Image 1 (spheres, rainbow, N blue to C red):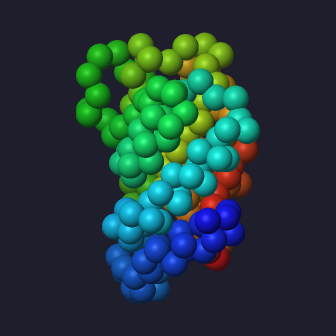
Image 2 (image 1 turned 180 degrees about the horizontal axis):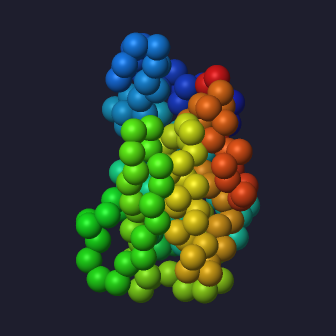
Length: 177
């Protein structure tokens, strides 16, 4: 299967739910990809093929859907995985970064014992929407003096302009307005 076919299979496997979680919102659900083993292999191949051209030392996945793709590609690339989790979920020495939500704030944490100065990091998540959580992840990684090589997402909601909040390269496979 070539890249165009893989992208089409990925697009066809993303399930859209109108009016969820509230009227006027179209929820783009990545779980349809996880349910279709051929689409899951295609997305794994697309991610690995893309990352092969980047020099990265560490893959970081954002809580929680970044956890679905990060370890899978780490095994293929022979790179370690590190999670960014919601506050209070990680043991050991952690650093924190707060970010704004639609109706409040939340906080991410990162274990500092597994990341060093000058580590070249790829951050992965399933979706880029308004960019708040991804921007917080970028700031958290940068606070360790590591370098964010790229933010990689499966789906980007371009109309919400999330990538404008990021001062690092962003790559998305599927875009919706």
